[in-house]
Image 1 (cartoon, protein in one colour):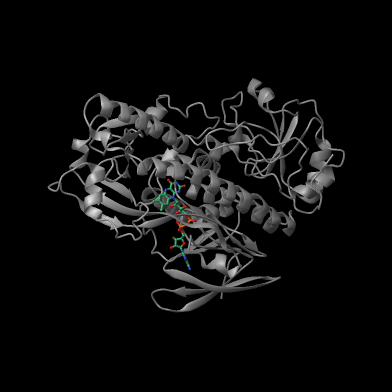
Image 2: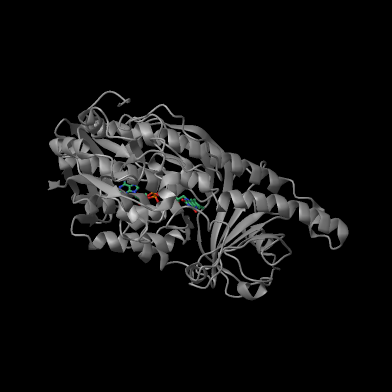
Length: 551
Ligand SMILES: Cc1cc2nc3c(=O)[nH]c(=O)nc-3n(C[C@H](O)[C@H](O)[C@H](O)COP(=O)(O)OP(=O)(O)OC[C@H]3O[C@@H](n4cnc5c(N)ncnc54)[C@H](O)[C@@H]3O)c2cc1C
């Protein structure tokens, strides 16, 4: 029997992220994964959100990730057009990686974050995570191995895992197991979780192509994403290597009930806007169903699910994987706190209480946008391709619509920074309501449960770089005495770091003199002075209290 502290099932982006986070916190982790070592995933996700990049910054990985993906001078523009080579209707301009570094402005330049979103395909992103994880002495990755079943009792979990090459089954004993085994998760089913929502919204034929001649046919500056609108076939094309390789999504309509209802080659040519003599090769095909499903359960005692295992939806706004990365950032420190001995297992109740409602909200917000996009695609009038004033009028109207829909998806500030945990057993609420958020809108706030507003410290460091690995009290008035909080934390062994800040921005963003921030950068408590019962607060933070209100 093998032994490990935490067993992660599935070495996709979410499994690798939680393994890296746990190892960073000194926990031994084993990852079992069906694929061979370093085998790339399918060409799916293209956007690592700003919030995810903040998480990778904490783990020391942001720089490495930014160096991967598209060429450094490739523009990240998003264009809507009648076809890839057709008439441009609208354009969202985003700088290339080099442009960002040189200070070029974009629609998201004012976001309060040290890490803007990063466009990188999963086929580049995941191998960087894998290589980093494989180097960590505390992570053991067992490839070509299938998790099959588990049992658990008060002492731990034993998982049965089968080597795909030899057929041999090995039991792996662990304290906790995390199922990051994707949308078809066995572990979700085994913990008794059911996907609830809409199982079928739209079928999509996805084809990854090699088309070296395409770049020369594009009109104007090349873009990263093309959103094509014509009455025959609408689609999306995404630059994968910034040279020859593109992923083409053909969105099937009602009345096209199977993935093969539509001739793939014909549809690709309509989306590209090329004739029958244009040459391209298919690298791979991955047809998928757009759904909106969230599990009604994220945990059974010592077993948890994260990422697509817990929720899947149409990737409008590029947010599926990013929600899974946020799950990982939420759960990793809680498990580490229990293993570290300073938190009680009650802290683990917070995971489902926090992440289940947020992923349900994200699924609704994203599906609303996806339905609007689907509607636009179904209503494209033939005039869109007619030269002259009548065509111009239709193009202007649809271009404006597409522009607005794209801004929502490419600048989803609310999805990144607006969500808050409003019913957590380990957050001390103070009665002030949380500010609402939408896909694009949010209000920076220190209401407990919100993401601690980011600002730059007087020495130009990011606030997030100055936080401790676990809890941090941000003090904007150095006169306020926090010694009773430190004593209480020491008594319970809770790692608590005090950060004095004097940046002028802090006073406008932080409504109280003291703000207690968690390891995942969400606010856990705030006040103008130390609480009357600091031990009660500390017990609440470490999952050892039943009350939410701390005075
Ligand atoms: C076309 C498309 C575009 C997308 N674009 C975006 C985007 O821009 N931004 C975004 O955030 N998201 C996007 N997504 C969603 C994103 O790809 C997924 O959310 C992400 O891959 C989920 O990561 P995961 O680690 O949870 O699961 P997966 O990536 O599915 O990984 C699960 C892993 O578990 C392994 N596994 C499964 N069963 C077992 C088992 N029994 N034993 C051992 N290992 C097992 C699998 O081999 C796999 O490696 C997109 C999805 C699609 C389809």
